[in-house]
Image (cartoon, rainbow, N blue to C red; front, side):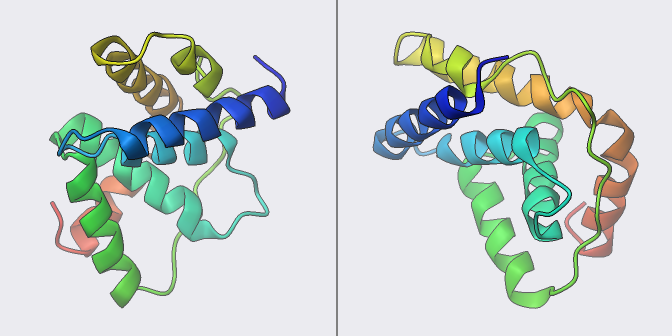
Length: 141
């Protein structure tokens, strides 16, 4: 895995790329969620990982676009002030922002973003039931 500084730099480069991306699906949200889940720490506020896992689940398992995930995050943040904690896997995926940034811009990089999301989400498989329960509790699924 690349060092933290190069991964953080790659993440910022990816956010610049995805924010300038004109695709209506808003892939930027998926980059934010994958990075947040991959780099979550025990000292983070619980909302950071909760939103990242909700976003990854909804995108990968329910086909939500980034824009739909973003809207849901806003709705949930406006009405909920307490978030559950989730266990942090020791290993959080074989891909990083560095790997994604190494892929040429365009469709290939967008596919790499999807692969990165899947790589990170798969490491949180044990949290899937809790993520689904939280979404059911809020009437999302």
